[in-house]
Every structure is written in C-alpha cells, then in structure tokens.
Length: 346
Image 1 (cartoon, helix red, strand yellow):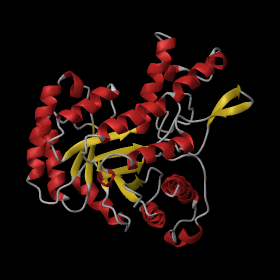
Image 2 (image 1 turned 180 degrees about the vertical axis):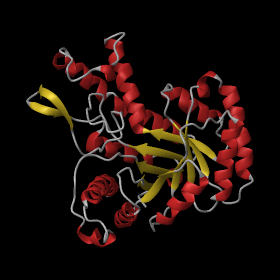
Image 3 (image 1 turned 60 degrees about the vertical axis):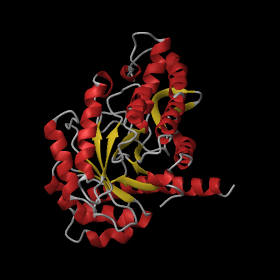
Image 4 (image 1 turned 135 degrees about the vertical axis):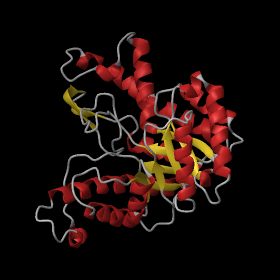
C-alpha cells in the first residue's frame, strides 16, 4: 500500500516454461509488496491463475479479453459472469474502450447503465474499468466518465503509454503534416535532423497524462491506471509496440544525438514520480489502483533465493530471464515508494 493508492504489477508468464515461473512471480511480488493484475479470457483460466495470487494486502485486478465490446450483449454477459463468479476475490475487471464511446456516446452510456444494473446485483462485486486504448481525444474519454459519474461500479483506466504515444504523434504531426511519427525508422536518412522535433513531441506526453489524471480524478470515482513508459523511436518492441517499457532506462538509438546514443523515454524516473504524486493529489486517492504494465525485456538475473522453485529445470535460462523482468517491475515499484515517501516528508 502506498500513500493514498494501491500498486500492482503485470502478472503473466510471457516467457516459455512451466508454472514454476508463476511461483517465481508470486515470490517476487510478495517480496516487493505488489498486487497482481492478471490477464484472463475465460473464468476457468482465471480460476487457475488465482492460485498464484501473491499474499499482499490488495485484491487483484483482471484484464479481460481485448475483443470485448460494451455495446454487445454477449460481452456484457461475460463481464457480468466474471463479476458474479469472482465477487469478493478480485477488485476490478479491465476492458478496452471503443471509438463508439465518442461516435455513439448515447448507445455506449445506455450499455454502461445496463451493465451497472447487473453489477449492482452482485454483492462484493468488482468494479469495471474501461481502458484508454483506441486513441480517443483524452477530453472525450474524460467527458464520457463525467456523463456516467453516477454509475458507482464503472470507472476509467488511464494507460500512460497509450495516452503518451498518441500525444507525441499528434504533436509531431502539427509540425510535419501528413507524417506519422511512429513510422520513422532507423534507416530514415532524415532522422538525425528530425530528432529535436521528435524530442519536443515526446516532452508533451507528460502534461497530457497529468491533465487526464486530473480530469478523471476530479470526478471522485474509483479509477485505475496502467503505468508504463516508452518512446516513438523505440526499437525494443517484443510485442510490436513502442511503449510498455520501464521508466528507469533510456531508449537506445542507432545514431549519436547530443553526444549520446540514447534518448530519455516519454516520462522517465522524474515523470513517474510526478504521475504518482498527481494520483495521490486527486480527491479520492484511496479508491485508485495502478498497475506497472511493463513488458519483458532482454536480460538475465541469477535466481539466488528462488533456485529451489526449479528443481527439475536443467537449463534455467528462461527462469533467469523471468527473474530479470520481475526485478525491473520491482525496481519501478521501489522508485514510486521511495519518491512518494520523500515527497510526503518534505
């Protein structure tokens, strides 16, 4: 538990191996004091994953399948089914937004009201958090939740990386009409001369995230965040995205810029502290949760105290890769705790 809000981390295998990797994740999450955000497309899958839930003082969150659409009866049935089956065992269910939140706002509001009615029937049921994912105008996203402010069980999920990447692309396009920042490649002969404009665009990401946190936070509703960093020039894209990266490392580039071969990410360590501080300052921070949604990166870390979890593994390469990823999550968690504690004491 942090001053005002609870911190979780992405809890998935994502590296090849058996469930010993999930046991390792549980150990490292417990040591870090982080709750878990699981990905589950079906109730049976979640039942299995919850066996590995870390013993910490925060209920897990569940990221549901990306194909769900609040406008569809089938999707609302599935969400309500999860809520009923896992009442009292999970804090919230996360699903992606759709463009119809803005283009068919009345229909979307009616669907949210119908889901709210069903959620209210579930004692100790979870919240439902709709994640910023398809690139709406942040103001439109916040306005939707203002219009459903009376719905107590449905709130927003602000994804720092998604908001930030959208902002950088839009900022860059204002100065380079018709060009997509995310399409710039390492072989682009103009990249060196364009880097200053790219960096100006990147620096606009943090204010955009802070505005959305303030706008959603002002509603006094429970909400959730996905915390991760990135950069539109990032070449480290194991899942084809330029975000979902640590806040604590710079972004390598293929050329020298201002005497270095790396650039700061959109937010960096100081930006992470600023975002966390903004969360604490919303009117009802105790109703807020945040998950470090950082994907695996290349690296290995000896298992040390966790070697006993892998007695039948002859080759522990993937276990050490998983251990490294978990260490990255833990370091970002420690950064938040340390710097919020420092800020709160002056």
